[in-house]
Length: 527
Image (cartoon, rainbow, N blue to C red; front, side, top):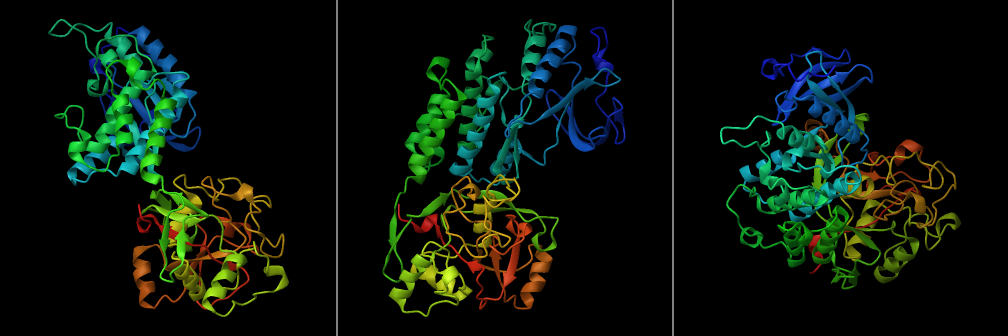
């Protein structure tokens, strides 16, 4: 059912106790929060047997039959939006009391508003990289959604931050309903009608002038949010230039910001795609443009980033609650770093042996293992660490390796969530030996890192300790002699190819299934 225009909206309550049933389908579990448009509850969807978020609209906002019809129309549009950066709408309806609601995917995370509030509380500016990453994801959501709908109410409260620095934008279409209802509202004390929801701070000039709105209004709002992430000043605070707050924002990035908040919409970015591409290009130009940078290792040889991939680092999810040695899941942050595209090969290791005169590793020269482009195997942890030092690099930490493999998307496998097969990885004794490192192109990560699943286990610099803090302390007391290896090998069953899979080996272990690759911290590369 839907509410009628003659219902007294002031008598309708939005307070529901745990256990209360909505439409004989949803069971209220707990209140999540309140906002200008209504109340959000966590609920259990009996029909689909899943947890959802139920957003109940304040009856004082949508109180005419035309408003109700527009709400349903806009909710149906939102329901068709399916994008990784858009909150999924499952259902729309009304309670027995006639209160309109939307059923959405339930998210574990913080609003961007709460995240910014934490930064302000601790007087810590947001990292430029993170601000760019979040803004780019908001724009990706808008690029997709603008084919069907203009949001009209982009603000930090409508942006959710999930684990791994992932963004979800919510409430597409609701602001249009509110705007339309305001046209039929009773005048206030000043004789004027106004929006019920107090989000004018992020509204574009044309919205404030009640002119026709197009996608460029949303882009203006994103510009205001981007500036707020860089300065920690809301649009309601006294205006300050970005350069007066911090000195690590490049001129090219500042230019992108300035264009986004131009008052005439003709002078702004004309599409979310254009805004996003220029934003990322400016960031890459100023913060990542380090090609073939060279330093010198302690051995005196020149160290280059050639053959490596740059990873920007950031927050991501480690662990896996379903496997004891991989539990618990937790969020971790890594600094930017370079990582080898491929495991170290026999050809590369041969150069190390020639220059250092060190003895060859076990299995060296055996027919099935000696290809120049096969990964070197049979190396102990000390031999791998010695090579890394000679090359002026390091063995990856377990977190660096994990970040390279699963990314912020929390992929199950380096290539994504599709099951392993012989086209993506060398495992399960399919070849009965290591493959050349460039063979499994379909199994590379989106960042073009190969062989992070299968072929050879890879040494990391970390001891093999539990992730759980209490167990970790207890295990460390016993000496924790083993080092962590990751990635599975040509001999592994499929479960060892998962990004979260890990095991511990004694440092002196030399097996035909174990190799390594190197990393180079970004901060160690001269700029």
